[in-house]
Length: 411
Image 1 (cartoon, rainbow, N blue to C red):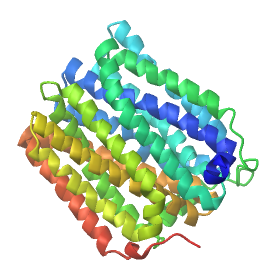
Image 2 (cartoon, rainbow, N blue to C red):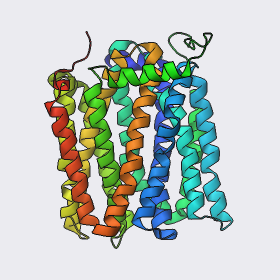
Image 3 (cartoon, helix red, strand yellow):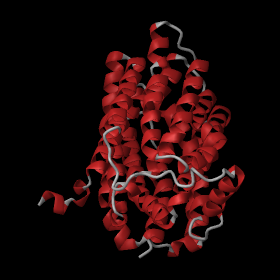
């Protein structure tokens, strides 16, 4: 009965992949909170330097992402996922070791972040392209929704827990826990079996690197089904990069900033759980185009709460409400958009499509994160926040007026 009611459970390869993803995501909540805390409260960096640190995590995407997309399309995904997890565990282990040796510095933090981001490119491109060989196509939306939910649960439970753990054992040791989670994930992934043996498409053919990169770019930008959502996503990520940097600096400036940050980001996770749980119904009810457009409008509404909040109990409640709404928008949007992209993209282009989309979106964070720091340091936190909200409004309006409003999943 349980398997008939929950058809994804009939695919053990997916269940193990899902479990591995949940374990590593739970650990990631520790690093996501620990790194800015080390930077701001231990190393006392400026908001601009915090923005540069956040940009460092995403800089490898525009530098290497298009090459990685070609590489992933020519190799089996599972070995790439396993190798990336082992390597990321080793890289993260540098930070607690440096802290133990009293050698933790801002340049080291940036270098480790760059290396971790470089490894994550390979993992992300392979990760997003892997579910189509684990479940039948009709289950893809549900499969991505479950991944979105587990990530959201990890954030909603892991982020507040990370705040408590960091307070007890310190940020560097909390990062060590994340490194261990990647080791566990790698071991679980080594047991995954696909519906059919993975084949490295085109690996035996002559390599035409420029042509293959161009094919990926053309598919993402010139395809009328992709163009509008891709371009507006770039603008969304500029706004998100700006807002997140300023949000971190703003909240960490409160009397109990680390605790408030953990609590409010936990509400983002709760919202994502709720949104991902309703995503399949929401997508069927409203369709791909209208459904995603509504979610894009929720982003500026959610962040309107930040410049209106202050260091008080009421301000924290307002921040929690805004992050809850933002999380709901992410949870609803993510599975629908991923299923749409995966469903209309040929198998041989999946790696390039995912790597191109993620790489160029993350390139926008490289722009937005330092921009937020500069605006906050030179013109004030509130002006920077309102600038980010304005960018979010523009991207939502642009997508609303485009042909993407008619987009739907193929039959």
